[in-house]
Each structure stands twice: as structure tokens, then as C-alpha cells.
Length: 252
Ligand code: URA
Image (cartoon, rainbow, N blue to C red):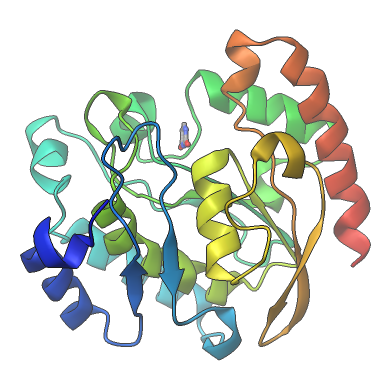
């Protein structure tokens, strides 16, 4: 393990810090084996110091334009070479619940829409099971461009894209944030400096975790990534149970 800023991508990180002066993301370590090791990201900022813009649609549109032109992203060339689009997010800007995935897959990158492939069908089923439609919630990802061959997002990519996610959360001000899968869960728990950060999703899934924001207390409800139900059918029942807990939390 070694500090990212020192050795791996100093150029990328310094450009990132210049672009996002109000966000300070510290990569504590860059795991030797990224796909297996847990990554830890500490953010100096959180939703405590973000204000909601008056024109939410304009603020979200500004985010879209910035991401479309994010030429310093290590995923930008791959996007252009494959005719992919960035996936900003979809749904209601007044949503009570925001679902956060990891990164777009191929179908998502081809359409510019989150969760439209196989795991999206599971997500739709789960939303329907608690009487919610996509239009009533907001669905997005930590990383907005598709990593090659669906590899795990790299820490520098998460550092580059995550301030956009924080801005999206500040626009929507959800009462519940539901990270889907380990990556999004780690990111969200670190964002709020919660003691559960670094915990196992097998222990934390479906448990509402209180978090403080500038607009009051919200709940973080970590969920398994819907893709797990594709290869482990028993997880579908777990996801259904957890989605029911989530809807119960809407009364926070
Ligand atoms: N998996 C994700 O994490 N996000 C998507 O948008 C699609 C699949």
C-alpha cells in the first residue's frame, strides 16, 4: 500500500484538486490488489456544508455538461472510442430515496441511462415490489463512465467522479441513501465519516444507519448490488426483505 498522490497519479489528482477546490479527497492507500482489497477514501467535506441550489434542474444540467467534457478522466478516451455516453443519473430531483450503484456497464454506457441491463431489471422488480417506480426515486452511480470490461473502478477514478455525486446529493437532499453493493457502500459510509465504514456488506445490508446532513438526519441503508441476485438466487429474497425495510424508513 502506498499513497496515491505520491506515486500513482499525481497529475490526475492535482488537476482534480484544482477543478474541485471545495472538495478534498484523500486516498489513504492504493491497494496492491485493487480488485480484492478494500479502498478507503476520506472526504473532508460532506453534505453538512453543501447548500441546495435554487434551480435544481439547471444545477444537474451543469453537472452533466462538466462530466461530458471531463477529458482528464482516465475513462474519457475509452468512452469516446466506443461511442459510449457518461451516465449521470435518472429520476426525480425531489426524490426521498437515492440509489447509488458502482459504475455504468455496457448497456448503460450505450444508452446514457443507469441500470438498464440485467441488474437494472432486478432493480425494477425490487422497486415494483415496494410500490415505487424509477420516476419517484433517483438512481445514479459513484463513477459516471464505464470502466473497461466492467473492471472495478480505481481509487483515482472514484476521487475524480465522486464530487459530482456529492453535488447531486446536495441538489436532491434525499432522506434515504441506498448504496448498492460494497463499493457504493464504502464510499457512502466514508463520505459521512461513519464508524461502520470498512464493515462488511453481509453484516450491514438492510440496516438503516443515521447520518447527519445540513438539512437534518438522514438514513443510509446499504443494499446488496442487484447483480448478486443474477448469480445467487437466494440473495433476491434478501434484497426483497431489505427493500421492505427501506420503505419502512421513509418515515424518518
Ligand atoms: N451496475 C451499476 O453499478 N450501475 C449501473 O448503472 C449498472 C450496473
